[in-house]
Length: 482
Ligand SMILES: Cc1cc2nc3c(=O)[nH]c(=O)nc-3n(C[C@H](O)[C@H](O)[C@H](O)COP(=O)(O)OP(=O)(O)OC[C@H]3O[C@@H](n4cnc5c(N)ncnc54)[C@H](O)[C@@H]3O)c2cc1C
Image (cartoon, rainbow, N blue to C red; front, side, top):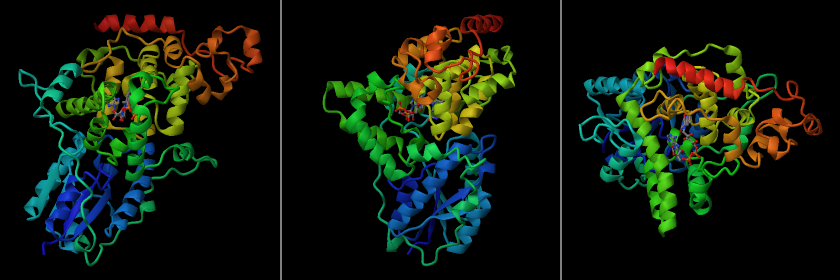
């Protein structure tokens, strides 16, 4: 019988379509699944608070699922190389398998660990499962990386063949080691927030989300059954909540992009379903594009890809930043989004664009501040997607919204939340404001505000800036670097 194989779980907290686990189980000997908590190895981007909350619950679910298959999950803390060596020694493993991480710091770390283990005589195999394309293989006609989404998508659709997802491997007695190595207690990782003044900020998240692979598949079912058909129409409506909510599951790897790709394509039965599927898959390809850009430009999370933005007259304004973070700007659609983010660890994509535009253009605060806040507060905080989208919003990215296109937070609210239902859900102090004024309460007649119980500046803030002045200021600053 073969020696044991360690399977190193990271951003792939699932059993189905898990190439490393699948191949390890196929090898014949015992399989030892292991997760190592080593935030210090993530470079400048150790996981934020909301990611950690999700991770705690996802690891709980993964452990349960592995045990239900007769296996188990060994939890350890880093450093990763020393921990893997220790586990190799205690299990007699002669191989370590993992699915590749693509973020710059862990990618570099993994390469070093692979070299070190191979030098120890260990078989190391790594597998691609994070994204659907190979960023070095999808190239322009001049043999470079893509910088623009539309031709990237065309090339992706023309050349990338998405293989079938793998089943959950057969485990059980055959793959169970005689002795399990010691495992740390999950609580010792300290992933859950401590309540402050009796308040647990993760409470609403716990009500809204169910982390784990099973929940991911239940959501996928529901989305295909009920929502995908209307996706193209509803996806820009935060009040309709018509998007999939797959992002944290894809980020933590409870769902693989290959599973999503195939399930969505297999769902199609007619032309209008094809149309809906294509709009949705276009978003999955945006995810591919983010990873493509990060792969070729590892400084994406910190430096503007359009160098001229280095010279932009960004403002340092801690008070304005704090008001934006807290959802106290006085612009209801912005504040609703920021409060949704704080409560659920998630925000609707359209509103992410609106709050991003507001921060970088109306307040002229650097996009990196927004990126950092999102990093800490999103359950789907993902280095490639977050950085690429912040650069898109700020105008400094490869295929970005032009800087001069400044979202008007009032008309955006009126267009995408026409009845004000989203604003009322997240800003209860405005719930009685009539729809005509819900996105600009400062324009309402005094008696109407009084009837709605709103005292501007007291129960809800006055606008932090005048949008039209702010827009002119931003455009003037942009003219300086253009
Ligand atoms: C400023 C800003 C920051 C963002 N930060 C993140 C982040 O940290 N992590 C993250 O996963 N997404 C991020 N996004 C992209 C997008 O907002 C989320 O992926 C989406 O809102 C998640 O909700 P959903 O799963 O219901 O999306 P759906 O509309 O159902 O889309 C399905 C999937 O497609 C992918 N996707 C959708 N839109 C985008 C996009 N614009 N770019 C890349 N992939 C996309 C996601 O994986 C998503 O789960 C950000 C967008 C903006 C404007």
